[in-house]
Amino acid sequence: MNKKGQMEVGGIIVAAITIIVGVILFVAIAQEVGSSTSTITLANLTLGTQTNGTTTYLTAYRAISNVVIFGNGSTPLLLSSGNYTITNNVIDPTTGGLSVSILPTADLYSGTGWNISGTAQATDYIADSAGRAIAGLIAVFFALAVLVVALTPTLRGGVLNLIGK
Image 1 (cartoon, helix red, strand yellow):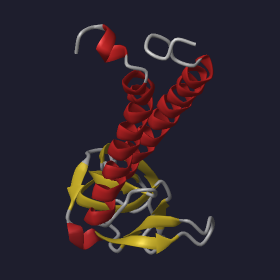
Image 2 (cartoon, helix red, strand yellow):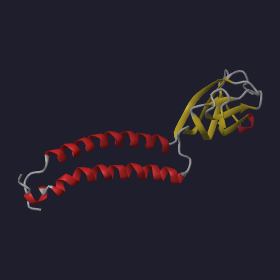
Image 3 (tube, helix red, strand yellow):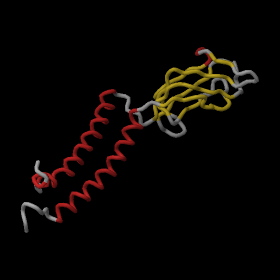
Image 4 (cartoon, one colour):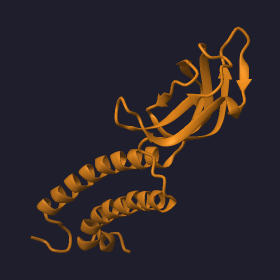
């Protein structure tokens, strides 16, 4: 075998398979990191009929901030924060999952639907800022590992010497 101009076929196949699998896994990792590190903007999420003293759980979210709630009576009305209590990071007793609870504390618009807007964190959101940074670094280092696997056969095989570099 010509050591200067040819690379082993087995090395090329291993590198190709590793690169293909690595890129597929990188896409999955990057999507999961993106959803775990981004907040969600809620706009007019319908809570359904609210009754004074009955708690409603937002099971898709763990925390919510910048809350604005409108009552959906015959004339929509912005509800002041004294009309409800919001508690983040509570366990929903029906599902056992992490959620946000909303408890109406006044009879204003009791028996009508409410709409909520705000900035929410999904249940898989990484609350710690260091954890979000590390999740991003995991994706970056995984991409670098795939790049090294892609370049190693090229550099080891002397391809750059063939083009005069």
